[in-house]
Amino acid sequence: MSQHFDAVVIGTGQGGSPLAVRLAESGRRTAVIERHLFGGTCVNVGCTPTKTYVASARAAHVARTAAQYGVMIGGDITIDMARVKARKDEVIEGSRTGIEKWLRGTNNLTVFNGHGRFTGPRALSIEASDGSTQAINADLVFINTGTRAVVPDIDGLERVPYLTNSTILELTEVPEHLVIVGASYIALEFGQMFRRFGSRVTLLVRGDRILTREDEDVARAMQDVFVREGVEFRFGAQISRAEPSARGVRVVIGDEVIDASHVLFATGRTPNTDDLGLERAGVAVNRHGMIDVDGQLRTNVEGIYALGDVNGRGAFTHTSWNDYEIIASNLIDGESRSVDTRIMAYAVFVDPPFARVGMSEEEVRKDGREALIATMPMSRVGRARERGETDGFMKALVDARTQRFLGAAIYGIEGDEAIHTFIDIMNADAPYGTLQRAMHIHPTVSELIPTLLEGLRELE
Picture 1: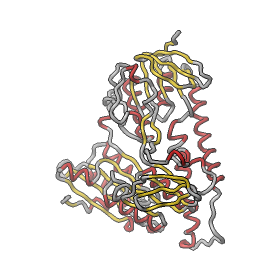
Picture 2 (picture 1 turned 180 degrees about the vertical axis):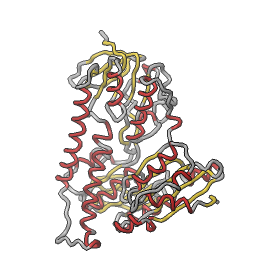
Picture 3 (picture 1 turned 45 degrees about the horizontal axis):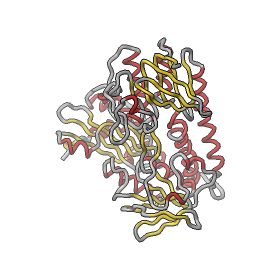
Picture 4 (picture 1 turned 180 degrees about the horizontal axis):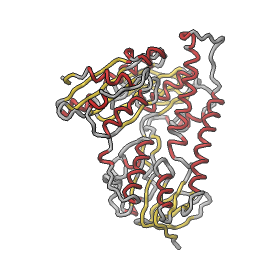
């Protein structure tokens, strides 16, 4: 017999968990289904563990460069990878356990451990690890199943060990030579951190530059920093074959052979929609397997919603959380919010970090509108000079007619924080002069943004 709920949430990621709690607290009899680890990608194999590793890698980098600041450290700086991993595991466990306790301790909320699959519109079967099943149905269903790493089909790969963003987090020794396939955000974060851990790192880039979604000046500036730190790049590189070697893994790229101890694939992600039985519910997906949704995150089937990475409307923890806020506001608070009006913003947590909001310069040029642009090197920022970290620059783009920001980018020290000055002004729909005339605190990165805006000129 099927058990009925007012609402069911599939997945406990950054959008699913708070939504389940809000629904239950609103008086709806709610269920949440988790087939593996509570907290989803961010807590278990995404933001939390990787940023914990970034912190360890930066500590090593600061120690190695301490003499530049008059701080003398005797001996070589070495990495105890097992301790780095143990620290990461402790941080993850605290977050994961906290989320599970939060869900299980919420009144009116039932937690199911198992794999939920649709058997019809708003009807599901939950298969537990012991093989037992339970049938449930609901008036509302919310899909929050996230994505997983994609590994390309390469001849011989089935015979060699390889890593993804998940499995690399289980290493207890620093790789001697880490080859990374990919050149986007995940590849770059892992590339810099493992170089700082002491690995030789080689990035295999299919095209002619990294970060193809960003402006070329950003990509070139970041590449220069990586090269200075000893990261190697191979452009126009596509693996044709992989095979075991005495060192670990041998990859063949045309006429070139690279022997590495480890190979990491950072070549994109695919949605976890192929084993949900969506066809039995009639839920439409696009050619990439993402669930199609409207501005209120509704699928083509009445009563079924999709939030988080699985809907293709953003691939970040903060977009997943914002999805939850939009659904909760509309269903519980009686508002009418839409993801269509969301201003995209994100950061790449390399060092220095890169952050962007709104349109890039390339996108503005393609759009063809009359615009203003300003750029400023981080070497003009007092905070950057004082900290001895002057790499990068700031950039702002303004609509010449409306005086509103079109976008902004910061590649430089504390750029992931300073970008919020632009984010807030853009969400307030205020003219750029509002930010330009604000008094900021000295010495900070944000205080130079008004100075940056003084240099606005026509985008030619």
